[in-house]
Image (cartoon, rainbow, N blue to C red; front, top):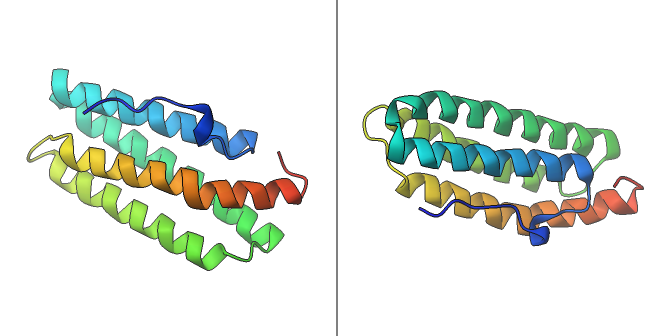
Length: 130
């Protein structure tokens, strides 16, 4: 699996969210490398990825509440799907470290960033948040 690197097209126009997304991609890259070269380190890296993902979603969802984001429920459901995919991947990691399911998660995450998060970012920008 190729490591996904940050591209300007992933920017949602909100610095904190972009930084969180960069860190997610960095952690996915480290996990991908560990699966190939040091599978014993993969569970620790996957746990770090899960922890950062949950913290990132909490940041976004706090803004949903504070600013009354009109698409909050739909966006939360997307977060739930991403969490579920990642937790399912983690549950199988100890048995068979593989990059295939991680690639599916990464693709889904990239689609989420360039779709729903970009829309959310534009909405935040309209609220004066950059």
